[in-house]
Image (cartoon, rainbow, N blue to C red; front, top):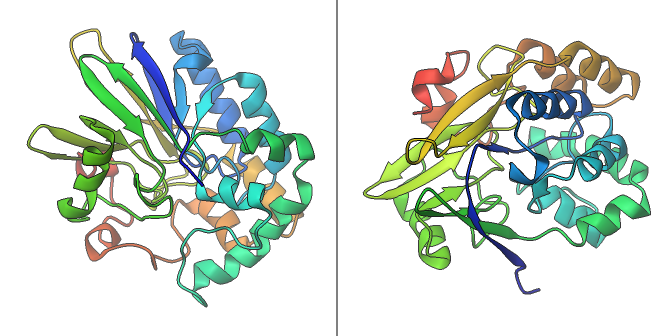
Amino acid sequence: MDKKNIQLGSLTGKVILFGGVYSNLQALEALISIANKEGISSEYCFCTGDIVGYCAQPEETVQRFINWGAHSIIGNVELQLRNGDEDCGCDFTTGSRCDNLSKLWYPYAQSLLSEVSINWMKNLPDHISFEYAEKRLTIVHGSYKQISDFIFKSTPWKYKKPSFISTESDVIIAGHCGLPFVDNYQDKLWLNPGVIGMPANDGTPYVWYMILDDSDGFSFKFKTLEYDHSRANGLMIKNHLPKEYAKTLITGFWDNMEILPLKERLWKGRPLNKLIY
């Protein structure tokens, strides 16, 4: 299928970037409150995909996102759901712990999503591009060529470079890997704002997003988000979703680090403010 790319033109003012809502309605509501407090309209809020995921309220989360009116590209989870596929398409190793746990949360989400939500997913773009502070930005999920690519800060630049070439962009904004970070090479910048549906393996229940600001040229700042993680945890337990992921909402530690390169494994439990820059 041909890729659907949306070109938004030039944007000015503060912009919120985030990813991986993961069916975590409580986190989404908290982020919407932040946007309102900052005076940032929904048209200036962008999700890198995977609105649906591990947590307990997939339908409510999708409908709240739709009603909010923010932008999103399609994540691998939405791609699989709209195609009626039987797995999440996360590219976990077959038989791995993450793969086995996905066999619990993915069919749960699939069973609860309405036809309206699935049809909405069918219209999500693969990528969104816009001009900002004299730079061209493109939002991807994994990478431009592959939606399920795991791209981390430590990932060699040769795997990041093709996304810039294909999109003719100065800045790539990506998701999927679950960790916030920035990586730069010469005049190119790879940004991952993090996800709001699960903590970043740093030992806190807080989650991550980013704000762009053009008031003095191009600048960005990573932000942590506090939300009612206890309620999100309780709803996962009540609905018999993986207790391992429910526990992560409380402890801030991932159940496993199968997908992580060695460098990112060493981030576990450490403050991320310095590591991600």
